[in-house]
Image (cartoon, rainbow, N blue to C red):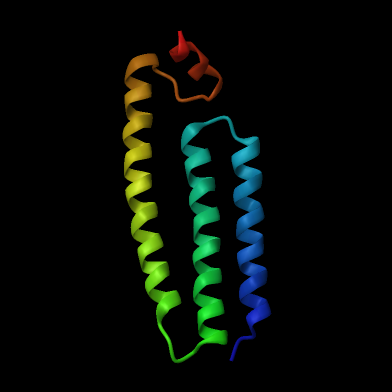
Length: 102
């Protein structure tokens, strides 16, 4: 059986990789992927804590499925927004989004 610490280490690495990618990237798609990494690390934490603290209950698993559904809907909306931005200004760099304000 794999110990809880190993799952938490993987989740922590995913969280910091997502944070690093979100802060350092200038491309909207890369920032979206980084956000998904962060959300997936949270989902891993939900499942791990549910499995090790309350093994007879399934609330963590259902909450994780709900969170995955919400993140899929969020991704679909974000990609639609990115496509609309690309159609208007032919670029998806964050720096060029200042032009849309005016």
